[in-house]
Amino acid sequence: MNHVNSLQATRTASRRPAPDQFRCVRPLLLCVVFTSQIAHAQMAFGTVNGKVQSALSVTPPQRVDSDTAHIQAGHANAQSGRGKDFDPPSFVGPRVPVGPQKGLSCPFSAVLLHPTDSVNTIVAHHPAGTTYCFAPGTYTSLQITPKSGDRYVGQPGATLDGGGTAIHAFLGGGDNVMIQNLVIQNYNAPIQDAPVSNCASQSSNWIIANNEIARNGNAGVLVCGSGTHVVANYLHDNVEEGYACTGGRGFGGSNISITDNEIAHNNPTGAVDPQFEAGGGKCTGTTNLVTSYNYVHDNHGPGIWTDIDNQTTDVEFNRVENNWSGGIFHEISWDAVIAHNLVHNNANALYCTGWLWCGEIQIAASGGVNEKTVEIFNNAITSAPPGNGLVLIQQERGTGLYGTHLVQNVHFHENCVDMSAGGNTGGVTDNGDNGLFSTQGNTFNYDEYTSYVASAFWWNNSTGNLPWFQSQGQELNGEQNATHCLSIPL
Image 1 (cartoon, one colour):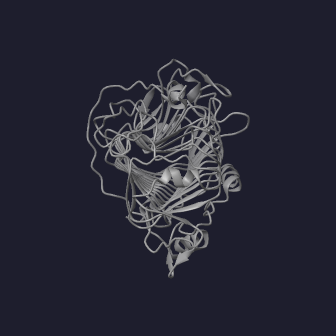
Image 2 (image 1 turned 135 degrees about the vertical axis):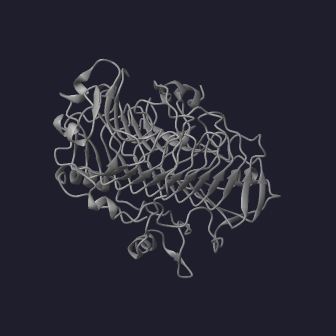
Image 3 (image 1 turned 60 degrees about the horizontal axis):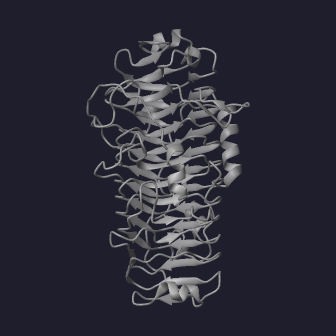
């Protein structure tokens, strides 16, 4: 059975929206890039002619963050740091150039490919571990099954074009594969599949770097193999979503990273319902997933979405804006850190139909167990109708890896939330289980609100203002019109 079809049921989650339609228009919140960011990028990726060039060396770029150590530190800092002031993120989004880069020359040992070559014949006649360099030009309907250790590098202008009929450009194959500096476009993979995928063989440790992957059906990249890094790509205008990854239901999927990418304008025609799977990207069943330093914008669906049994998830330093169905969405999953993100204006009346759906940061039937938590802190949030701010949603969602999917042990703290144009913050339930509000360890505290409309806080099946929310035991140290929020760079 095709792995995509076998996972389709588990990767699809239903939601229960309610009617209410508005449209939001808010100014952009721009990030500031400091010199230290560029220095970090140079150390991580190297330079060409003195300029930062992400992943241009044929030596695989190292993951920018310190993988598991970074995640563990984030969890520890979150739990020890509650009670501090909001510290606005100084920069968010990619630290290095995205997409194919100029100035790349083929290494001396590489096998040079041309558009008129029989590429698959050449690949078949070379051993595993070969580096191939694509000369400029268009390679039509090409599908490659990489061998272990192969590297596929494009010179500027090298384009793999599926012609609207070919399904995959790179599918399955061996481990430790690099795909770099290519334009990959017009492939026609089926729903929940992508032209670049290591899922057929669950290959591990792929690096997919500095590519432009655009106008494909349906996702841009699909990742199943552990240790795969999707770095500094421009993933845009794909029919369904920019990326997808999965690690559950018998597949791999640990230590995947989605970092330093621009992910934009996916599902541009609304061909795929975001309540199914569409938007910036969605990951399922992963362990130690890192989604960081991405610019995720103008996708018809959620921006960053983790759905179904993701555990130890890290979402940091992303700029998430103008997506149409919520910003950062953690759904029927487990422990996570969501921190240092700029998240704003992620709602549209087409998809956001009332209740507390389309939160800028939305936790649905998810939480920490076994002394683990979901920590959401130091995020800069701007909401407006028909979207919302910081949101907890409890519904009847069955069981997963660690038992019943409940909103439990979720902690919002030291976030800056601007609801002056509208939107709400708090928690709701529609299954009659009020443990969300009392016995399941969920807290809002030390968050700062620049302003809000009347009755903007929802809790315990009622609504009110901030003093009322505090009377419910939440935001006991929260502030209104806090000056720290006003220091966010605009």
